[in-house]
Image 1 (cartoon, rainbow, N blue to C red):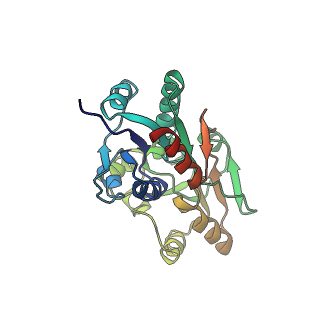
Image 2 (cartoon, rainbow, N blue to C red):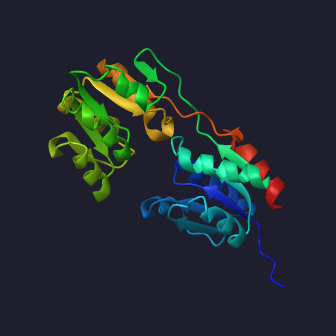
Image 3 (cartoon, rainbow, N blue to C red):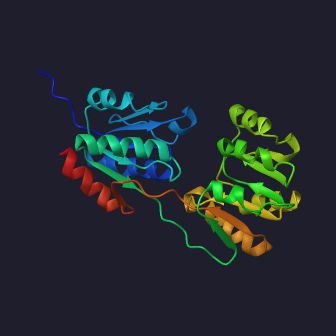
Length: 257
């Protein structure tokens, strides 16, 4: 009879998930990381006890995935705005009494240069963007929501250098001269040059934390005197949450050994 090694499901695609994998693998744990794109898979080094699975797991897929991969515990280190996967997994974990831990990157404090809105709807319903030259650093998937505002403001966007991102942006009314495709991290000099080249009067970002480049945007906004609107993070998931790598290690030791 073959005894399967208990494995950790690490919901990844972020710098934090890579750091967690690098900390946990030397401790002898076996890990299955899930990411949504092949590019995100490149975050992780090759290791005999690390499997990287590319593609979106839907709710019906997850029970079979847990059984097939012999998953014994889940650490969710997905992006703070990856709400759907976190909500789906926490619901399944609660139903099955399955060990789940959310690793959440710290939230940066709000400075005087920042206006924080609770969600995208609040931003769109307000008059924050009216008649301004606005840089959106939210990601291409958010851009269709701004299509009705194309006639009310001069909108620019920074997106990832992917064909689907460019297609989404153009379909949302962004012309090529108002788009730049760059993969973070972006240097301070390049960020400043971009804002100045486009004569930006307002920047919109998400509360993604330092790992999402938010610190640099805050500093630059303060230096240039440009207001920054930050969309707050969604409400935390219904599960145990930590920002402490030590607690993640203890969680794995409890449920995987």
